[in-house]
Image (tube, rainbow, N blue to C red; front, side, top):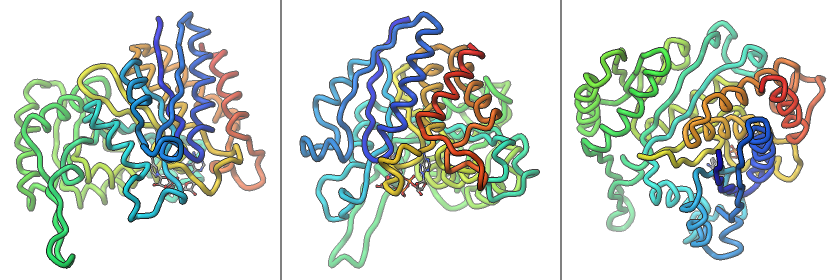
Length: 357
Ligand code: NAD
């Protein structure tokens, strides 16, 4: 197949990790007889420096004319003045809004060979394999907000409509159908009106997916269960802010922020794929960042935007094979063990991919 992929490296370690993932996508294309065209564009802090805008028109039009976007990360201390009118993160929100990317998918799994890196006991991490579906364009992050009077009162509005909940619930139910057929919807229905609407709507959608077992959890008790019994969850669907917090909590299970991928999807096949970590200014420019989250994001891109499920699975297997063979970047290496650069780690995945593919 032929596909065009826009690469927004962004800031800090962003371009370092996307470079590794692009090289592997090129390998996937060569092995499968596909043609992938890559087009790079400015995004985030580097785009502010060059154009004054974190999401310039030229970048937007390249994104409009491609099949999928692979994104690194944005931000850094040089753009972090809270009083600044233009900030790199505004680019992310505008990108999501512009393309109606209402569902953020974050698979979280643990790797037995990295169990020593997670702060939880190894037996709690056994068999952890879950998928968060976070609503991405509604709730308190997009509702009306105001600081009032002399600044001693402020409010944000957590607002949801039935269609907004229905569409993200359907994404989650469909994902559950392809997995262990268990969906947990997380809300705060005992207190919040928007959560009662959320729960009622998810219940109304459920009969469309009779093969999926649905249960509900209150966000506070879910936050505890996520640490006490993470392996009992399969797919989790929740609103924007709860999802933001819970997915970072879940990331701890994987042992390093550098391990986890994400996909942001709308109604069609177009999607934005990025690791969950930030621009890591403390290690930027050293070539030592863990590219796993970005490589696995590239696998999600193959699966969801290009419908190349076999290639996606092969890339995911290659990552596991490389880890099994002892390939480690600094963040996941045992003390005294050999440490690979981002590029060397990518090369080990490429060697494994050739064997798998
Ligand atoms: P961060 O995720 O960048 O870094 C947190 C810690 O994890 C750091 O010690 C970093 O070195 C380490 N780390 C992160 N990714 C790693 C990787 N791939 N390999 C090895 N180690 C890794 O979070 P932060 O320090 O809170 O934020 C830094 C900047 O990134 C800020 O400007 C923030 O706004 C931005 N940020 C951007 C995004 C995004 O682009 N989606 C997400 C989160 C934070």
